[in-house]
Amino acid sequence: MSRPVIHVINPNSNTVVTAGLKEALAPLVFADGPQIRCSTLAEGPIGIESQADVESVVLPLRRIVAADTDAAAFVIACYSDPGLWACREATRRPVFGIAECGVATALTRGDRFGVIAIRTKSIRRHLLEMSVAETASGEGTLARMIAVGTALRDEDGAEVVVMGCAGMARHRRPLEEALGVPVIDPTQAAVAMAMGAVRFG
Image (cartoon, rainbow, N blue to C red; front, side, top):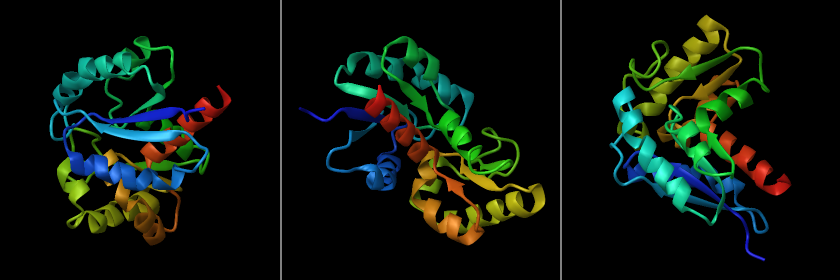
């Protein structure tokens, strides 16, 4: 019997982000568990940083979900959750958005949480002012994330920190070690929920 597939779709065209997702999801891969397949939306923008970027990927994502008859579940790996409802309309299989799953997971770890956003256009407070590509490259990103995470913890009372971009995936563990509070990678959270839906559904 073939193992079910969870299709994780990076809706931007940056393959470095997709590689970071694969690395971050490796701990969830085990012999008799669902397969985790990561793909890149080649026609997407290099990063999803504005509402125009979000809107531009909705129909391409819907087409991918509708055409993929092999996947048992889907994860849209962008913190804006682009096309989430359009994709849900295109299939009877579960579709998870990483923002929804990241927030839901954070609420199981503490009463107050903060989100590290990439730019002002994404979330107005506690932002890095970096592009998706810059967060994925790692150059200086972790130090800035630690500074923002420290402010969320010390100034705003955040008991949990959520990384507000799929491109930040590779920084979860060192960020958690530096801050001393739980740090949620929303893509890991979404895939874990998808695994539960596939296993029990």
